Length: 108
Length: 122
Image (tube, rainbow over all chains, first blue to last red; front, top):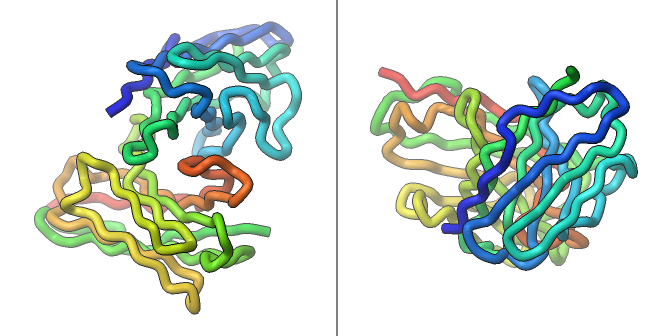
């Protein structure tokens, strides 16, 4: 099973500032990585797939990068509506899809 | 507009079998490339993928739970059913079903249901 480790667990960022979230895979997943956003009390929402492709309706301030074992989700100018928990997910081994533990983004 | 809704018991006893139904609209599970998956989330914890079924009836299960899971589809009813045997209190979670669009990589989910809470307790 491919293990995804996200850091930090909680990220406090001032409005308008940059937020950088990390996801590390225990083995290479190529670019087969997605990010999901889960706001309090809501179901997850697909944000990024293919490591860097934004899903439909996702604002340009959210971007993904990386390949292999190191991935980053960047929010360039944090807005209040970005407050959420963000999960990464690998689908390289789709015999065993796995999610990371999540990073909670909050407003400082 | 694609929507999915989970239904099933809110409380099950240990050792019982859980049956959850995902009823969807806005797409057909007989359309090439479409898939529906189940994912769960224990309270305050991370997401865990459980199972996935595709338009061609290809089925995939979490390796750690494969002996306990079964996923089926009924195209005429627009439903996907997940059964999980031998329930345990650690299976207490919110259970989500989710849609995979044919334009997306296999194993990604673009629309999720609201989730249904299942508690396992005697």
